[in-house]
Length: 317
Image 1 (cartoon, rainbow, N blue to C red):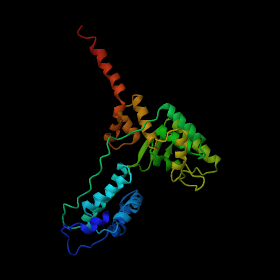
Image 2: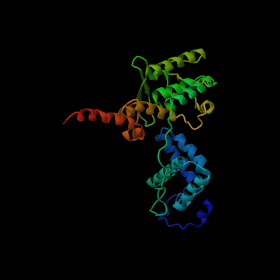
Image 3: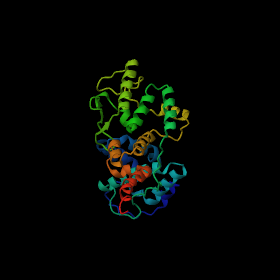
């Protein structure tokens, strides 16, 4: 259906006759991706999205042909295929960024009402999944029984620190200060380093990881990874294969690894920890990100109102 628009759309762009008529594939390969590799920390995400969802579908179009009718059909086809709206929005973000840079660099000249940034799809309220104590117990037992030597310790650490899976997966021994009970993440999701406060239980997990590494004859030098893959002797690429097995065995097929971070936050709030403290512990760059957990506070807020009522109720009698 996309090809229909390519041959029937009217070209109302105010193009310069000297502007290079690059295809989207040529622009990505020759201009955008070299720039992304130099300026973005995780440029391989762009590479994966482009090659999977854009190269074949839109890559042969010239930049001036990528009008809203064409792009709207591209979006709609992804919806029909059953992609999650949040996933499609990631694809939309990449297209918008590429077209904006094409304009900025002069590959698209002039202005057209038919070539505006694509609007992202509405995704509804942010959904969160929190594990109960019984579910955590089932999950940890399933992880302990898993053949992966580090899955149990990895999942424990995420539950005890609220760390992101990538932060834990790439943790090195040199990042841990046992005396100060601090784990320093050299570069977090927002591009800055952050410090994670370690509880006694988290320290025990790290100590167990060292014992496991020694048992498996894996290196524990400062530059080595805490969770070293015995096969590759470097960091695990992911824990997904083992995670899916353990998760399903625990009858928790709807739980994602990232939900362990949500669970950590919910347990803190339900124990009376303030949103500001949760923001600090999770390493959120803004309070807005932490506000998604605010709905967990009602019972705590009711308790707080009693502080004033106890004082006022005895006055004026």
